[in-house]
Image (cartoon, rainbow, N blue to C red; front, side):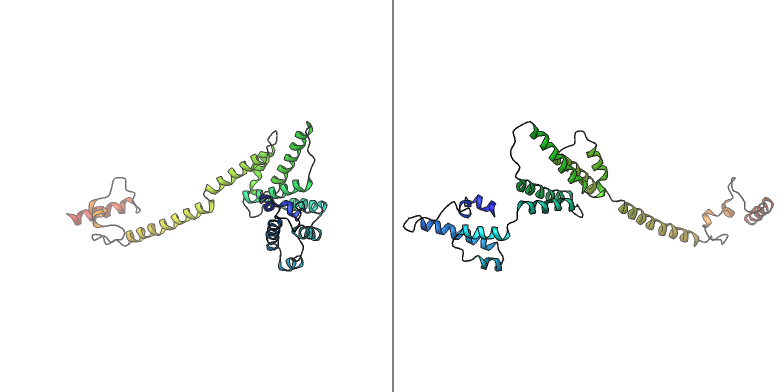
Length: 257
């Protein structure tokens, strides 16, 4: 809300710096119109119960102060909440970008609540570097274990990189994982190929097994490839003793002649 008021140049109304002019002034109507407009903005952001309780405030500054007194928190309480959120935040199911955005939002609010004094001496650079290192450690320690290797490589850098550089390295790692083919997909693909091959080989075996030779009446070959008809090769190894096999050849030869 403060950002919207600043963008519209209306912070002076809620801060009470722009007072209501006298009723005789020609600017009173303009002031009243701005006051009512800002009041409607704030009421639209409140629940009905809270809005009804401040509906009859005389001006926007009174309404704003009442809300601040009722719901405003001290810096100490807010600092405690922010530090607790930083300690409990984890990446979980979020991607790196979403996790980093959540953490950076807390850092920015923490810097606003802390309101550290400005310093122009040389020590400010060392203090800034210390704060950057603390943010880097907070960012890395809550990453998922999938990034252990990349996290270890970042921590080995000397000097330690800034948070944006570490964020860029982790984004690259995340993108590389997205384009890699999962191992389970390769396993399923291999299994699918194997499933397609085995039935085909079995079918061919069954088909070969059903062929019957018209000459010897045995299964597994045709008459055109029957050794008893076309002759045995020289390197053929007989399953029966050579004498019996020779007799078989002679008998077949006599049948042919």
